[in-house]
Image (cartoon, rainbow, N blue to C red; front, side, top):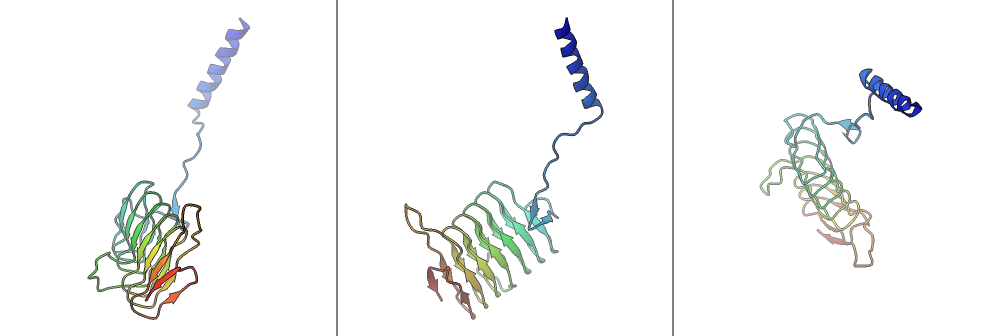
Length: 184
């Protein structure tokens, strides 16, 4: 008999807690460089946007404005668009263009790009850009304009070496010592 009373008391306590709205753990707010997302989906506006990708493979287009973009996980294709964009690639082998991704782009601004982990391809295109490969084997293309190219930390693995290729094309480019192969 004592056993049944204990079970009944536990059931009453559980039902009481549910009735008064005892909350479970709060869901974490995902931010990009400390800022909350300002547009839903992966396409920006003509203004200054904060765009946060998913953990999957994304195509993100910042469009106009000075955007802050965090690609997060997966193999992502990121296009900064017009404006002075701040782009973080995240883990995964990302393809990142500071501008529109079009080889015929005629506009360009100073973009800052961090490739994150993974073998990234980063093309600053037109305008002076700060391109940072971060970890692993990256390809950095500065394009026209005075660029700063930083291959990142890459490390030698037992299965082979990590190599960062930095290509400046036009302008007065700055290459940091982290670029193992330089094409100017």
